[in-house]
Length: 311
Ligand SMILES: [Zn+2]
Image 1 (cartoon, helix red, strand yellow):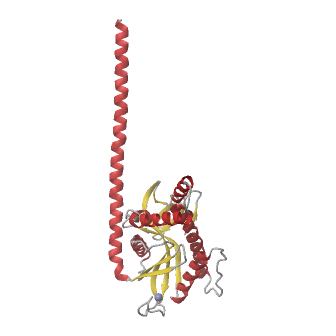
Image 2: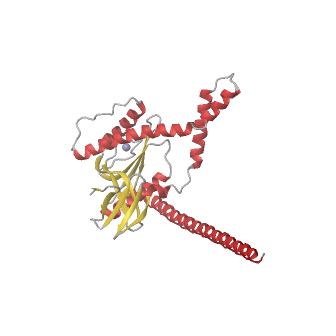
Image 3: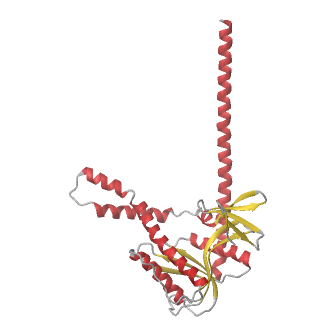
C-alpha cells in the first residue's frame, strides 16, 4: 500500500480510488486530484482547537515552583537568586522534552512489539528494551501486561485513515481484537472478540481531545473498510513514572465523541476562513496604502518639477 517517493509518502484508500500524499516532516496530508494536490485537515490539528491551557498552565507553574524550591538554598546572594529564578523559567520546557524522550522510547518499543506480533504468529519470548531509564521499562512492561491480560490480537498498527465524507485524514495507533480481562475493576463483565481501536498516549493526563481524536479515527476506518469498531481503548503511559491508565470506551460513547469532533472540524474550518479573510483584507489595505504613498510621492515630484519649471 505504501509507495515511497522522494518528498512525500503516498497512501491509497478505498481500493485505490483515493490517493493521499503525506509529508512526514510537516505532518501535512494532500489529496491527489488530477494534477492538483489539495491540503486536507488532519485529526490531531483539528482537535487542537480545544483549549488545554487551563491544565497546562497549572502544570507549568508547578514545575517552575518545584525547580525553584529545589535549587535555592538560603541564605543566598541576590545575584544567585535571580539566576535561579531565570533558570526555573525554562524548567517546564526541559521537563516536556524529557517526557517526550521517555514517551518516544517506550512508544517505539511498543510499536516494534506490535509489528512483531502481527508478522510472527505468536512471539515466544518477549524481549524488553534494555534502557537505563527505569521509566521506559515501566511503560513497556505495563503495556505488555495489558496486551497479555486482554488477549490482544493485532489487526493493524500505525494505519493512515481518510474520511471521504468529511474530508479529513489521520494516523491511528492500532486496531485489535480484544477480550475482557479477569480483573473486574478493569473489565466489570466478561466479553470476547471485540474489534477495538487502540490509542497510546504518553501524557500526564487524559485530555478530552483524545476521545474526539479516536472517534474520528474510528469513523474514517469504518467508512473505508466497512468493518465495525466495537470499542476504543485510550491507554496512558505515565511519562514520569511509567504509571498505567487504560480507558475503555464502549460503543455508546462514540456518537457524542464523534459529534464533538465534527464541531471541532467545523470550528477549525470557520476560524481558518475568517483568518484568511482578515489576512486578505490586511494585505489589501497594505497594498492600497503603498499605492497611495506612491501616488502622493509622484504628485509631489510633479509639483516640485512644475515649480522648478516656473522659477
Ligand atoms: Zn480489563
